[in-house]
Amino acid sequence: MKWIGQHIYDLISRFRSDVYLEDISTGTIASGGNLGLDSNNKIVKASEATGDITGVTITTDSGSGAAFSQTSGSVGFSIEGTSGVGVTNSHEAITVTSVPGEIDHDSLLNFAANEHFTQANITTVGTIGTGVWQGTAITHAYIGADAIETDNIADDQVTIAKMRGSAIQTSGESFADNDTSLMTSAAIQDKIHGTTVVGTIATGTWQGTAIATDQQKHLANFEFEGFSTGDGTNYMIPEINSDTKAPFEHQTSTGADGLTATSVINLLRTSGHVMPYAGTLKLWKGWATSSGTGQTVNVGLYKFTLVNNDNTAVSPVSLKDTSFTSVGNTKALTFSESSFSVAFAAGDILISAIRNGTNNKRCDFTSTLVVEWD
Image 1 (cartoon, rainbow, N blue to C red):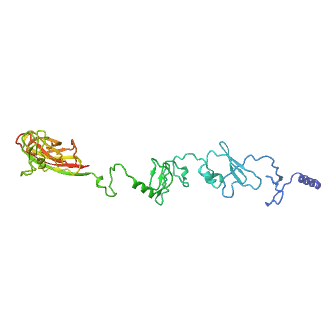
Image 2 (cartoon, rainbow, N blue to C red):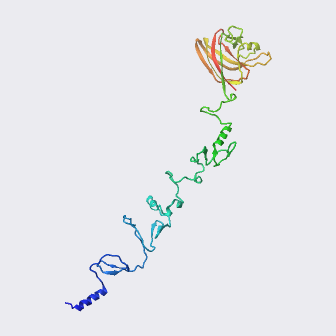
Image 3 (cartoon, rainbow, N blue to C red):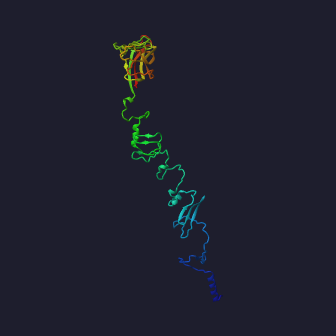
């Protein structure tokens, strides 16, 4: 048993060394924030921190407050990338000291409000291979030289970034290669109206004004028909128009080749076709038949040119000669010619001629000649 004084001594000694509290209420420390209780409820004094903060762990906010907060000092944190510090925090500001190796979509959303992740600070993004542009309109300076701007079509105006070919000249405006100024609809109309040569129009419907007569191709058709009993040797041209069978009966001889000179009066009386304009022969197509079989029959086209106030005999000129082998007068044979030896001049007279394969064998023919005026 200890005596009373000894107990008092122990209590005093213990108070000088360590102080224990059986129970203590929680509350706010008004001053001296360095005292606290250890796990045995002993009052202890915290050691003073004299070293550097070597790292800070930031955890995801669970909803009760900020994931990381600081009430004093300038303690910061850093996020290290593959090639050094990527983002550094100095208490209140976040600065980018080097570009991180990767920035994913969530990172961009989280740092959208930071000035270092704004559009103005993006200087290089490389080549966009695929995708749809969702940004603001691309300015003219960054559009390729061969591009044509279609978003500037307004008020009858079209902006062409680059124009190929020779300069376009109009009555009021001139547009050369690489001219980026606006071409008005009036200028385009000036150019179209001033065009004199456009080449060949292969297809389409003409919607312009009427084409002048002298700019058109004109075709004309002439009928040639008749019959002849012949002599089997010479070409026979139509009879003079005093004959009751003229001009269909061909019974006036012009020689074995059809080129024998004939008097002016007899040629006029054949009732040939006078050509009003110069032109070319395009097509001669018809049907013919002849009595007898196995005989060669010739039907020819000739022209002759008269001289005003002159009675000199004129030799016909052959335009085309077609032939067939007779198969009897009950069967018709067709012929079609599109290649001719010569053209004709205005005023020339065209006639037909027949040479039978056998004497006194009748030949009949009917045909159409197509000519094109020059």
